[in-house]
Length: 111
Image 1 (cartoon, rainbow, N blue to C red):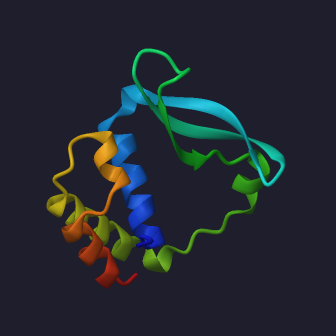
Image 2: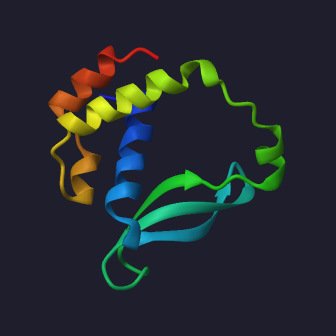
Image 3: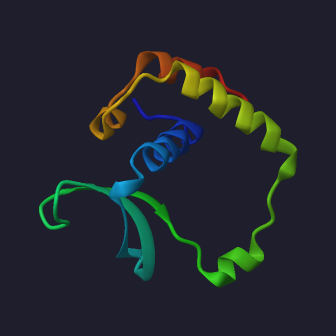
């Protein structure tokens, strides 16, 4: 079962908040174009460790062209805060799987 986009983004946000010491920048290709990505590693060295890509870092051109939709801002913050109260996952690998309570919550979340 595929997770809704807001749920996937929420989970990546939780990984960033809970495991800041594992955050790394890495290079990647996004549709053939070079990109810098933010990822999470576990273990002592990058090679052979678990690497979870979290976000593509925005270049200056993309930053300059963004136009935030502030009409949904408060509602999204409310959804995230409520999800955090329901979420009992403690280890990074737990975010790889379905979580019945969180899955149901985000199925019904409307922003």
